[in-house]
Amino acid sequence: MNPAPFTLGPALLFCPADRPDRYAKALDRADAVILDLEDAVAPGRKDDARAALVRTPLDPDRVVVRVNAVGTPEHDADLAALARTPYRTVMLPKADGRFVGPLLAPDGRPYAVVALCETAAGVLAAPALAARPDVVALAWGAEDLVASLHGTSSRDAAGGYRDVARHARSAVLLAAGAAGKPAIDAVHLELDDLAGLRAEAQDAAASGFVASMCVHPSHVAVVRAAFAPSEAEVERAREVLAAAAGRAEALAGLPVDGGADPGVLTVGGQMVDAPLLRHAEAVLRRAAPAEPAEPAGPAEQSGPGDGGTPEGAAVGRTVEENGGRR
Image (cartoon, rainbow, N blue to C red; front, side, top):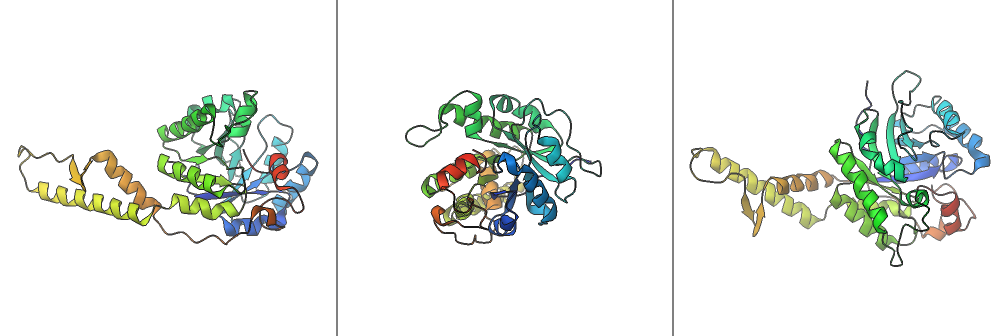
């Protein structure tokens, strides 16, 4: 039996798995929480993180567990701990061609896998990963990708992604779309750059991503707002679909050879055909109301229990060493 489709989003918030005091608050603030056994947990605390995962229950329908990569010493131990929980959605980092068999839950059913394509091999393997029945979504990450290429930075001096990162982002989105699977955008690591985050999330939503990953609670509200279409966009979508419905009704009574073109109409001076109707439908799907995120203070003020950076640590270094996916 294949896993159910992935429907979480648009804001997925990372939480270190060795901080169970933050689990519930992180889940409360976001649409779903990614309990992280990988990069957010120091090597010496992996066992503590797995123990916390087992003893601290959350709503399993809104939890993704990021395990360590296939082939690492921690991977099998992560799966053993996961088997003692009700969680059934796994984020697999550095997914590539080495991921050959399904990850099986104790009942013998495959876990729902979010394949994180964040290496050169992973991006090239994205189409094959997306085609797997146990893979329910693709995600991507820029910093590990550039590291796999022996590069030094995923962004240019202006703060935008370099061409190789943009290519990888597009490749993962296209691979997911070709397989009918959702794609999840990467995190924005500059914690206080909410304008940059907003622009990237708006582009992600317009391009077809279903969600963005977040490393700090203050990013959740920005991502949610970016994925929600504006009132003007909603009104335009309704206008387009209403015009199409009226056109179809008017044409229904005409002879087939009456000379009218049922496939194209003009709305507000713009030609509208089938692809633009699908765009309008997508806008209305994203317009479903969402619960507002709890306001969060500046990144420097994040404290224990907020799902963000560890207490007392320097913000930049914490994300570099222990924070979520790049």
